[in-house]
View (tube, rainbow, N blue to C red):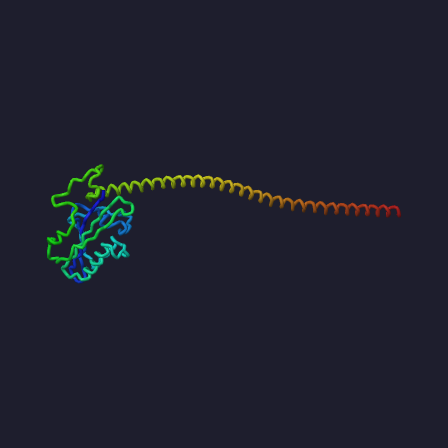
Length: 284
């Protein structure tokens, strides 16, 4: 079952250097992520996705780029190499019309979005030129109104068949997407990111705890190394004292040797003196 949206884009020249670019839904609401696809939205962490709808009241803004509508359509249909593609022919025609657009003239384009279930072509944009009209005409002309393709008759939307029914499977349907649905999807996305962040935070907490345990073990090893260094320092002090005592012992040993030699020499001198005295006594 295909999903179908239709909206109008227009460019009005209000002066020689300024234009009005606008869009509005033909019927119901059109999600802005279809009007402005995701690949055309600048990534903003504060606004991760387009949330909102385009209504029949429309929206517009002033622009200094006269070919902005052409560039927008070119982004919707980027296949320039398909020279005989219907959209390509229409876009080239729009380009030439925009170049010749006079002041107070307005160019209108109908864009039809179709989403399918086929994987090879899930969605497509069909572009149709509605024509150029004078901006003074506030209401859409009968000719232009007849050219606008509406998905339902003027009596209102038909009752949609149930999904189980196999009849009219190719009939396009409108899917009303409200801002609340977008916000719910955005909230679910935030919840998923929050769960992932909590998982990563849990892993970081485990790593921090492991690092704290490693730091405690490192501190114990550091204290042990300091104790060993203190003991080595005390041993070095003892070694210096031992060397000092060893020097004193050597000096004492030298003193003992000197004193021994002195006593031996004194003993010999005393014996020699006694012998000489004995010899003198005998001679007398």
